Image 1 (spheres, rainbow, N blue to C red):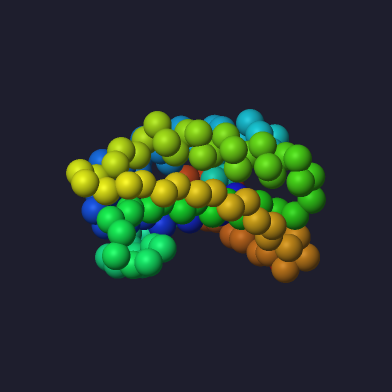
Image 2: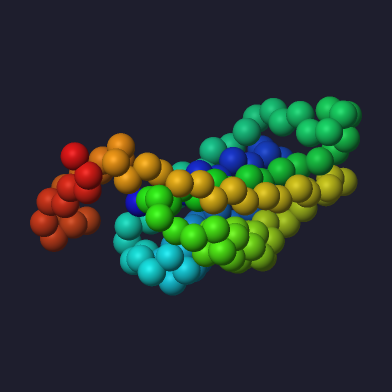
Length: 131
């Protein structure tokens, strides 16, 4: 936790520094929600086909969803959304001949229903959340 999912148009594969974005994103989120970067998990999903607006426009997109354990105020989530959007814009460039649409959504994970377990060399000791 947090879980971050980034969907992006396939035409941005060469202009989107995904690893750089993820590495900059984790400390930003941790600082904003008073967490630690090592709990952040980001997955990138390349979208082979996107239909935006009338479907005829040459628009590429990146959408970031940040899912946090519930309990953050609307003001914290709004501030995080704006900060992530600003950061994103510095790591993705437009594809030639295309407009670029970027968006961020910060959502809640229900604390009562969320479970997680990490074990292995990345963690000094097994950890379980929830359950």
